[in-house]
Image 1 (cartoon, rainbow, N blue to C red):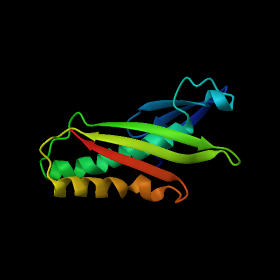
Image 2: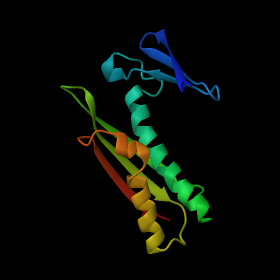
Image 3: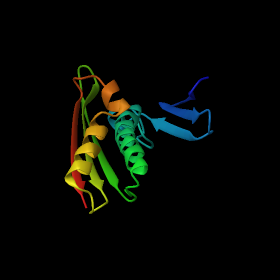
Length: 135
């Protein structure tokens, strides 16, 4: 079964539909590459896929261990490079919202985040700079 359908809307915009749920995401080319910048760009989706995968895999661990991370926040910064145009770096600042975590729990959270499926799928030349703050 297919995962998604992508329909080109013209003017450097695509509508992407998740086939199982019907959820839609619109992408737009960024303003520095002839687009309007009115939606996530395809490379933005790569960067947020990394952040979302990290917190999802951490969420699986903490759910199993009954650790609450509700309200944790990830800030994502994507750095592009040219010749060839590609994502050079993704910076993710992860604020974990649980002041009661011990050092072993923090170590495991960080290990799991760094080894999520998206992190392991990206090219090794792409720099993944991840910082953790515990509140």
